[in-house]
Length: 493
Ligand code: FAD
Ligand code: NAI
Image 1 (tube, protein in one colour):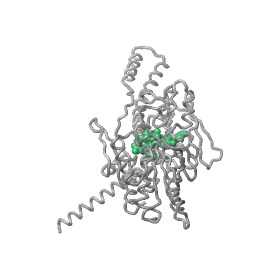
Image 2: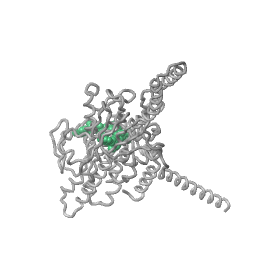
Image 3: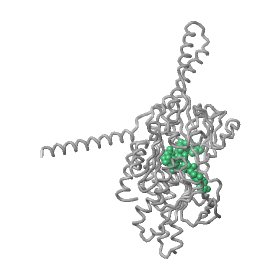
Image 4: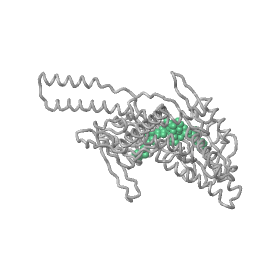
């Protein structure tokens, strides 16, 4: 009994200690202290976007060095890898969102966050024009500000290739609103099919879900949809289960072109077992409100009835990016995105640093690349601030036009310090690729001791979950996501 009492006391102390620590961390995150105001002697750094690239930069940036202004149509960061889980209700939207002010309010110097859309950038006069697109303001007021340095991280938008009906009839999987729209549409299909008197044919149509694109987004969406159908809807709508069908359409001969052959084969096998029909070498030519037009490589076009189409066919540049590139036609000739040098400076506009999906580089457009670029820029801006401060000292020495031994020594000392500031080029370090494929299975390709290590299955799924849990940007998000996973396991979606 003495041992039991001891165990009881230790457990109590551990519970109180853990709760107290959690409470302390949460309170620190919730109640940031006062910040330094803007300093007119500092340079202005404007950041466009609040996605992976911009947020990674903001997390690490020493805002003491700059007057920083963030402009983005969304006042939050979206953790995109978990977006398909939001679409099926495994996670709630707020669990994968991080308000940008949650980050900026913890900075030494205040950061101005403006919820607006940048509509144009003038790389010659160094200005950004932005518009408040809120429906509360019918006139959409615009504003133009000057920047000394601009971080251009507006990402990309969903590519539709101008295929008829895509914008009108399909759900995308890029923004939080897309996931919410897909969930509403999907549940509407199910309830409509459950309406008394619905014909067999109509039930079959409504419960046929089509995912377009066999890249990682399409595969993850199909996997999550499958889980929702099998783990939840099968129990709640047993009479409809036989009508539920999932098809993934891919224009290329295979899915997941960036993964290894073994993992592609593993994914295809898992999909087959899960009764997800993969149609490769098949192009979607059009989307109607109740059907998709498919063109298999060696067969005639066919119209297939369906209730929901999710469009995950890749990225293209935003209009604001195309307009900016058009202002520098000689340097910016690549249609895929902004060309940058190895310090991430936009070719033709050295005060603009472009990162992430809006650029065209040898790297894949991934969160991993964008966040490493953001982190690199935070380090660069520290050095740039130091260099700029020394340059200013040198300039004031020149302006004073004093001559003499002392001035010469001072000048040489400053120049020496400036020489020591070396801006190293950006180097990407690939940490591997992960994707969820449904049925509590994931695939992973990880570089270990210089070799690619591939794995797939339930253990990889647990690794996938722990990897993303640790990658989430805040303690708050980690708690919410972990809580949602438990909620979904115990009570369903
Ligand atoms: P984004 O993160 O898209 O951010 C762009 C920001 O710019 C947004 O805040 C947007 O609101 C803002 N913006 C847009 N227009 C304007 C404007 N006019 N003015 C100012 N701001 C503007 N990558 C991985 O590495 N691993 C994954 O598991 C993974 N999973 C994914 C799952 C899904 C469903 C999706 C869609 C993508 C996934 N990606 C993944 C890719 C990854 O999300 C992108 O590569 C990454 O978001 C790129 O970061 P970014 O900062 O360039 O752009
Ligand atoms: P993607 O460009 O990788 O894949 C889109 C697919 O759609 C392509 O395979 C293309 O052939 C196909 N397609 C295009 N038009 C089509 C049509 N009309 N009919 C049928 N198929 C068509 O796009 P995705 O999956 O959105 O990924 C974008 C980026 O985000 C990639 O770099 C990817 O690596 C990254 N990402 C990474 C994830 C991960 O690591 N888990 C998850 C999601 C995205």
